[in-house]
Length: 212
Length: 106
Image (tube, rainbow over all chains, first blue to last red):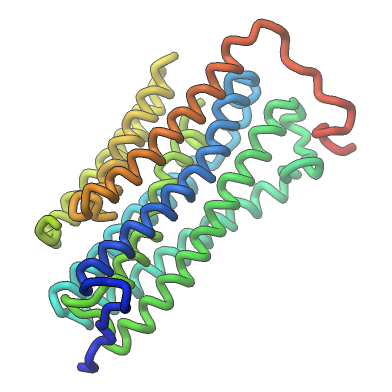
């Protein structure tokens, strides 16, 4: 096994303090990510109370099967990435690599389902903003619902893609046996970013697919 | 820092999340009237807490991290609740969309 590059930077007392600072920085970043999405949730909440009946009609048109399948895909991917960190801490590099690959495959499955769903919408004329021309639901509220839907799930899908990039970086380091019980801040932070993606979907799923 | 989380804890957390997701689905198919959204949000909050505390290791991390998360969460609540309260307590009719502003094409 290659010796890890586990040396604290000059301005830190030791590795423990450096890891603590890294996690704190990650929480500050993730807190801002949550606030970014919170703006969209606030819009959803306000428009829903304004166009209750239209939102009801639009939600009826959503594919509950695809949305629910994606919920279970993301929940399971959160488990596999958590287990990859457990494996790194337990000095099981092969299990760590396996769990990371499983997470990436689940992430890809999520995107395939999501884009399949977008394909169905586009075929019906459901587009965001002024390109919306869905004949079945011409109401202004349905139009707003689907525009919000595209913004919320689209921004979320961008985070899924970014998360896959982060996890690929983590995987490349895992393949070089970089993560050890003493030094695994990188895989931990990558995992936290991935869990954020799951966390946001936990709220998107009931609000856009289930609540009528 | 607390003890490192065991693999079984992650598995139990995942199982709890799956059960809660199934509960969300089943409850959404029942006619709960005005309680539908609060119940769905309550379950989502519990699921979110599981993810944040166990998967994201907030239980393991120090108090400062918890304060950071708590501040973000407080501002999310303020943002969503106040903007919704504003719209819900308005008395006038819905605004008529300006012609062409957000109106469907064709």
